[in-house]
Image (cartoon, rainbow, N blue to C red; front, side, top):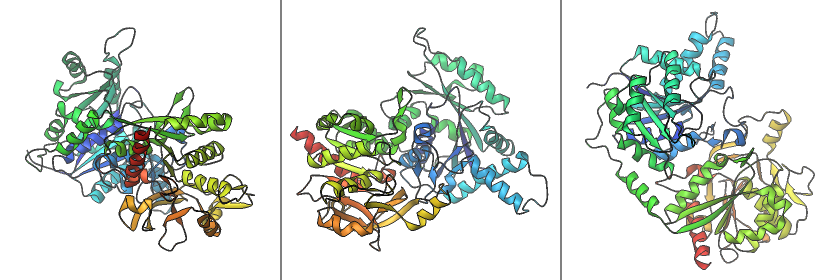
Length: 551
């Protein structure tokens, strides 16, 4: 076997959305890196949005922010968690980015007066971005997830770009179809026909899958593997069983039972760079978390959970995964409960129910809806000494609550909600005011990684064990510098600040006042990984466990 050009693995979805393409892509990346190969994971979103920043979280899920500040699809968070490293902005592509760049080049006569069309110009722009990502990541192999499902009009151009790459480099491109095999309750038998139809539709685009990852409630039996293989023109060992698992971190181990790594490397004529692929650290981690029996109860107070009659946890997926990782590394299995902030506005008596939890988190968000309920919760957990972690808007509302009820600044508020408040303890930066005046919202917040200086002797310093950190941001509003002295005099400690001291990055209460009451202007959840959980989540869970032990 000899290596030719750069290798590409394209992951495409079949039958329906939500089958786990992102986790499958991340798992393939983890497995290939265990072979000593340098992998870059790339997400394609077929939306015309230039980035994910303006997307509604109840429809699209969490907006994940890279170090660079690029606002991305939530799958990028899974990629970073599985690879345990930061990814560059070149690892994310939207249709909006592609079309915008082509149109800008046309406007600047970069096409020499030629007629600019979808084929070849949009297709070639997509291919150039695939290649650029590989170059920036210095990778041996790119694993590229094409968003959407076979049959969507939106992703056809990306599949066409992948097809052309395959035609030009037949030994260097491999297609993986992640498809769903239903088990209808009234029938009780796993059905392969939807997957067969998805493969035929993909064939109509000129693409033949090399591997099929068969998602279902239960493991695939040999009979179904053979049936899929015969109808879809692949070998039975290239049908990978992907049953439901306890948690997403089981998936790489599960895939390796069917030797997906060997199948990919063999098809691409690649040798591992190490003699024995090593997933031992990942296996130890998964074995540990699956054996935990002691629990810790955490409540997340949000407003982006409801979607019709269902609950969408994806709006806070990085927070959820950060809690899990913090709990697992503390030897506990997390029991996470989603609570709607609006309920505490309508029924304040329900606040007493928070005593049943060992810790409470208020994540980020925007706008007025649910803010009153969140502040009721913040006051309750502050006064009743329940461990609390406020993230971004959660910290801002904690500052507002403290200003009102401790610093005696009645009617204090954030100008995001009340522009006429007499005490704007949370206000917008001047440059952000200009953006809003010009209705310039996309990509204009404080985005990406910024440094902060941590004060010694604080909860934050004890967690980080460092006086200088870098964390990712996504917000417009800040603690108003005019109120820092007043709030500090009332007992609120700003333990993390920007290097010039102008921006308040962490607010907390002293240990002798509250066991753990911490708010961060940034999003620590974006830096939490299964093998390296975020220090603030570790400390938060430690204090939650102490409360659990007392109970």
